[in-house]
Image (cartoon, rainbow, N blue to C red; front, side, top):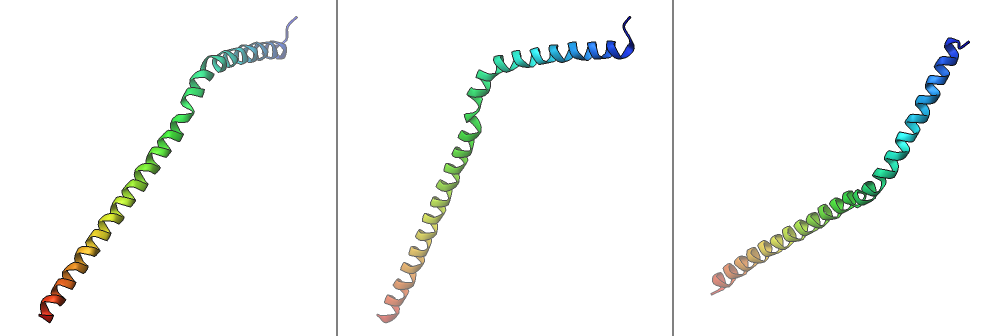
Amino acid sequence: MITGMTALRWLFGTVGVLLGVVLLILGVVLSPVLILLAPVPILIYLAWKFWHVRRKATRGMERQRKRARKGARKAKKRVEKSL
């Protein structure tokens, strides 16, 4: 005769085995997809880093040009005053 506890143990055992088999099959099926998707976050990070460095360099060059123009204007004024 099957008692309530035995029935529960049998049910959970069967569900556990079925769940394990399903997860194993999903793991085997999805692992190639996950391996292909693994580099995506790395590529996104590298693209962001490249964009950030390029933007920083561009801003630095613009600042240098501004300083050079400002210095040229000051020098021009000094030359005009001395003449």
